[in-house]
Image (cartoon, rainbow, N blue to C red):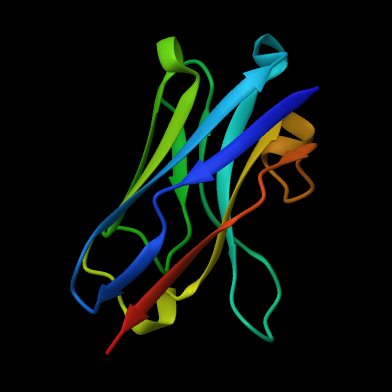
Length: 123
């Protein structure tokens, strides 16, 4: 099992920045890659960004490309999401997730999920 704990959410004005963290514990050696997803009220959960646990491959949703940066620190078993130039439409609960293989990594049905952290962007 892998346990994930997010932190760093909060309230910020439009144009501001936040950095989310996701600390992984447990069987972290089984992680193939990790990702950030978000869910706004009344909407379905959507992909935000993903990163391989090894190597430099990463990808982003078009809606956040150029504004958000995903990174990781393997020594700390922690993944980050730096969010800049935030917009009100970025308001959502942000979840980190871990995938055990490429089949789930490139999809949305990751095996492990954190509890979520609220990000609210005021206009």
